[in-house]
Length: 64
Image 1: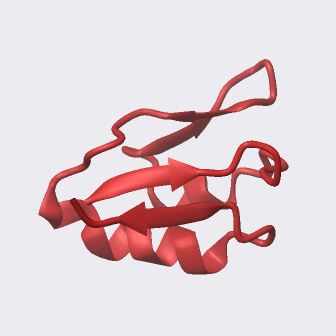
Image 2: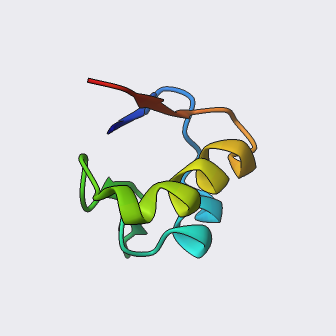
């Protein structure tokens, strides 16, 4: 699984960070950072919750 973020849509509101803090972080500069673009399968539930919870639908998962 690979995390894909459409940064043109992302508002850096940190919903994803609250759900999957090991994968997403909004830093002091108010920009979203992907900490792990290819997280382990053990993180899938949190990543899927972040995808579904994103208010701008800016996050997706690509299966490689």
